[in-house]
Amino acid sequence: MTTRCALWARVSSSDGSQTNENQIHILREWAGRRSLEITQEFVTEDSAWQNGNGTKGREFDRTRDTLINGARLGHYDVVLVWAVDRLSRRGIEDTLATMRRLYEHGCDIWSHEEPWLVTSEPRMRELLVSFMAWVAEQESARRSERIKAGMDRRRRDIEAGRIEGSVGGRRPGSKDRRKRSREGYEAAWAPGGKLRVARERRLAAKRAEQAEGQQDPG
Image (cartoon, rainbow, N blue to C red; front, top):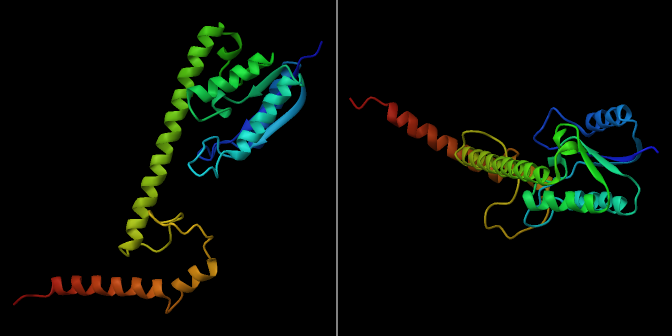
């Protein structure tokens, strides 16, 4: 009897070496080598990490729920993933809960990058998965901190006139959630626009201070 499988692919935005296409390609080849029948493929580019206002993670959750429901209905016997952290980036509890739901429906999980997941004793497997889920959560948190620090640094440089450009997102404390007008932004930075004028004044004042400091007192 042929074993049926589903493929699960999710690409992290920070991993430029991976795409959903090459993940799926590798998983297809793996399924072929193991003589598995592919009955369904799941692909998502949504973040596996939820943010406070719920704009991230919705599509990921819907796709993952569909995957689990397919296991419940007996559409496949095993799920092939590139790595365990493709199923979650929200920490130990979320990762283990997802895996337990699949296991409870009689569906196994095979990881291309973690072959021990297939052969480990169940309790040892859960311990190893817990550790890897914790590592994935920490990596995600550190990446968010680096992005925030980079945006803060860029904002300071723009406000000081050291560079030109803009920083995405709303200013801290802003309550205006309306979509920003690109036309208004371009007009503000056009010659004579308020942002352009303000920047030119800051630069002129800075040059004047530098010139005054370079003058010979004698």
